[in-house]
Image (cartoon, rainbow, N blue to C red; front, side):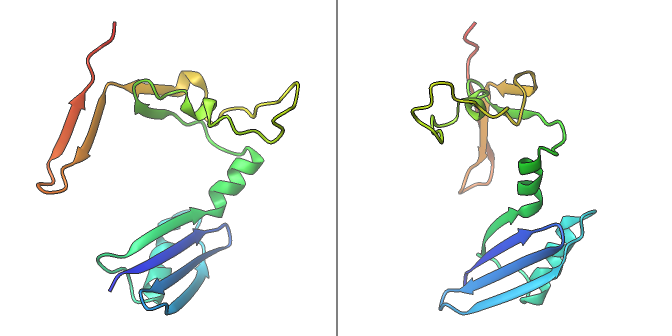
Amino acid sequence: MARTIGIDTGGTFTDLVTIEEGGTLHVAKTPSTPSDPGSAVVRALDMVGGARRGDRVVHGTTVALNALLTGNVPKVALVTNEGFQDLVEIGRQERPSIYALHPVKPAPLVEREQRFGIAQRSWPDPVTGEIVEVRTPNRD
């Protein structure tokens, strides 16, 4: 029987909620382990009987959200499909003040020189499990 599992890894506590197909709800709360966040997730899963094949997992992290809100994030790189490197900066054209004459854009999370596009896409074949690769020819 598949469940949906929601997990929030916070700075102080890791919270987990499961919803069974019939609507039964289970909740677990355990102290977070900042040096190894995964161990708190495993501990919370153990409190609700562990993970099962077919479970759907939704994971969020208050730690990451707080880092984004405070700007306390390490330098990172973005590796994506060729031609998509700037989407993180272009966004969806949504803005808080659509009629602002001088809108202020927030700084991008990944600086332009740290964004890398590769001319390949790969994914596992759902039947065989083999990796399917499609290489895009160079456009130069």
